[in-house]
Image (cartoon, rainbow, N blue to C red; front, side, top):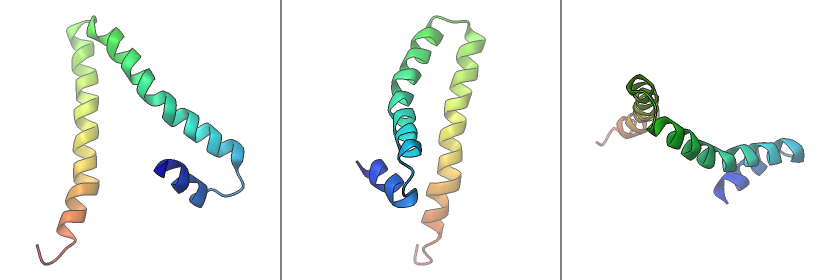
Length: 76
């Protein structure tokens, strides 16, 4: 719901683009699960590559979003 409201506020009068973005977001989790199922039986190197992608994503988010916001408050 929050994503839909944010997209509607940002992109006005672009119904087709909004629908495309929401469908892409809705399909991301099932697609990720399917990739995970196929990778679970794969070679060790492929598992390492996908694990590296996931760790890199969490590291990027923590460095660019969380830590910056925490240090922006001078009181802390």
